[in-house]
Figure 1: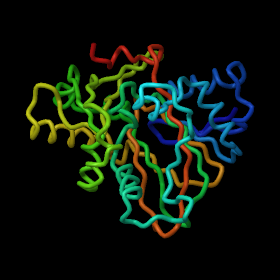
Figure 2 (figure 1 turned 135 degrees about the horizontal axis):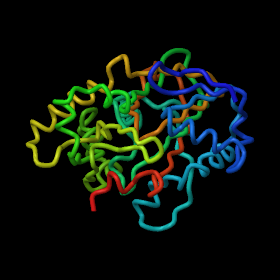
Figure 3 (figure 1 turned 90 degrees about the vertical axis):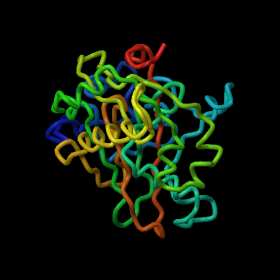
Figure 4 (figure 1 turned 60 degrees about the vertical axis):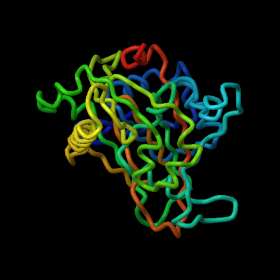
Length: 289
């Protein structure tokens, strides 16, 4: 493997690797070590079919199956797609589905509203528009290291509450009322997530965050807004311009991310698999007992 910086503060571009060849004993240990230390990895020129994508994700941990979580029973896993298309073609910009995609354009961390948060997202480019549609990552590990002590003091021992419909209400009140957005109870997590391998801390926050325990709603909103604004300053952000065959993965414990807009008359499809955290990934550090 060869490496190059993805961003001056975090991330690596990894070369000379065919992800179809990765197994638990071949290349995965090296990739996992890079993931723990650098939070984001880019692999270009890949040819992952869905089975390859799923097999790679399973090396990182349990596949996040939201339908099974919601149902409380086994439901067959299907690879989620992030797309403005369905079987009938490109969807209208005012459809609830596309409005939900616009919710992903808020700075967020996946799955903070679920019973178990995500460890990783493995995103694969499938269909790309002619312009736009970038994915941006921000390192909450680098930002936390630089954050002024006065701001850190707010979050060091804080508990943050998360709600999916909170972020969706910023896009559309109708979208926020949809059953898919309201089926998850409010979820509390500790605000700081230390990496169990490196010991480095990161701020665990998202657009889904709506309250800091023990503080009023207006104060919470202002503090959360300021923290996300600090973490997403240009010096902490990597903007990825997609090419066909790109595979971008990131550590949900130590980054924020967002999509960028494009001409919705053009199709854009990415396939996305998240894996859930386990105790080995530091779950007990953020879980509220």
